[in-house]
Amino acid sequence: MVKKIILFSLVSLALFGKGGIAKENIYQRNCVSCHKTQAVTLDKLFYRYLLKYSSERAVKKALMDYLKHPSYFKTVMPEGYINRYGIKTPTKLNDEELKKAIDIYWDKYKVFGKLKVKEK
Image: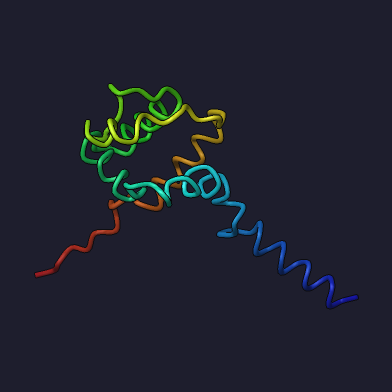
């Protein structure tokens, strides 16, 4: 009986504890699952947003706006890509879920604080 309780606790911790799959589930399930088969990977897409919008707040706002109301005029992708693959359909996530997914996405690919400064 004790072994079952310990096993259940370990499985629960792995699934729902800090860093478990539940934390990234919304991002994994709604973003990664589709983009892993796309011509442009999520990291490359992130850098396109970062080049165009520069700051965390501006990138997140642009992503939120585009994912809720995708259009040719809002995309960061080149015309050739859009002509070949089209514009995505609007997200079905509510604002809170979409914000969580975007926050996870930002934390995964942000470059700020990850660049090493060479000391003299």
